[in-house]
Length: 146
Length: 267
Image (tube, rainbow over all chains, first blue to last red; front, side, top):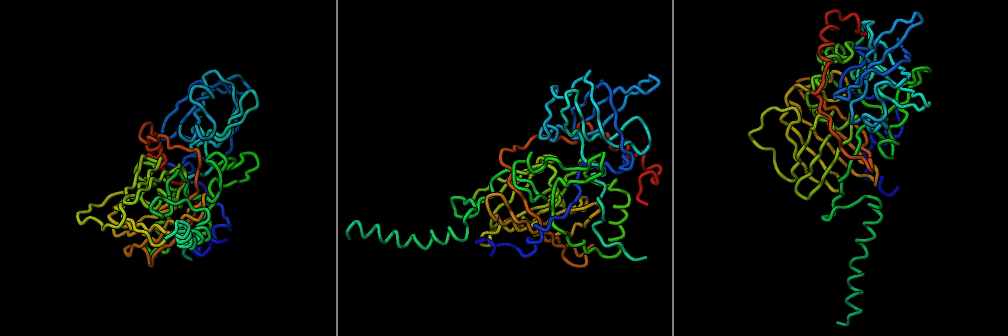
């Protein structure tokens, strides 16, 4: 490698890759519980294509026939575009979809969306992984011994 | 002098230069002034080669299996050398799952976090006298004049004041003039207005900038904090809009969560 003389020593360690959870606009981990995964199937009633996060609303019918309108949070429009979505085209009011994600910590009818599956089987990510923005697996500082 | 000899002389004079250029810098694009050209759209905090879509595909947690595939891949990093009282504060922020992140209030992410977080693309435009870095996140930009001193009338700001110089093929950016309202890197990594950041950008090849950042802050750190990562070229990507304040409902929800921190706090 002819350019290696320019390589800072520490940069070599980069190729011993370690996973770091992605940073986000705000802490999904504070609001949503990564230990409470949800899978919902229903009909889209509204889409908010907005910053810093988009939302869609889903009418979900339970076994007794009772309908609950869920609110699902996800990526902003810039990320949705790069993840394969088009505003007013990919997801519309009336679409029947299934979404995986995580339930809000307060147990309300809202959650953090991850993967949407459309009727034709196509799958796209609407939101980030669980825990995004909440600091990841370890703090940036050594934990002092107690 | 015969024409053929003149040509030969030029060729002989040019030869060592060409060979040197080819061996030392085989795949590094050069600007007209001979400096490595950093112009392009890039993603910080990643080491994956490819378009944005290729490099970021498939990342995340599989909701069924729980398997985690990283979006951005970084090297192992040195723990931040905070003074004990300051480390406690960083740890507290981690335990509160970053609910106090200034970015949640749509505030500029600061330096070097804006570059390293890699969530959205950044664009570099290079001229001999000025290098401009534009970030999709929050419309943040850095104007970096080359070969000048910091102004003497700085006021504390989120992104500070940056000046650049070339050390061989490395762009060195010196930044001061910060407020204390941003985080340096991970959750809770606060700093004071004494922050001094020195960044080294070295274009290694077509796809890669080696990025070394040294953060000095005697008010909160015990020694300079050095981090290494790479910034990767993202061909075909263009900066889009990210207007954070449009529909920022997080703060209202946070207000409710903060009434009982046991709901979200790490045990």
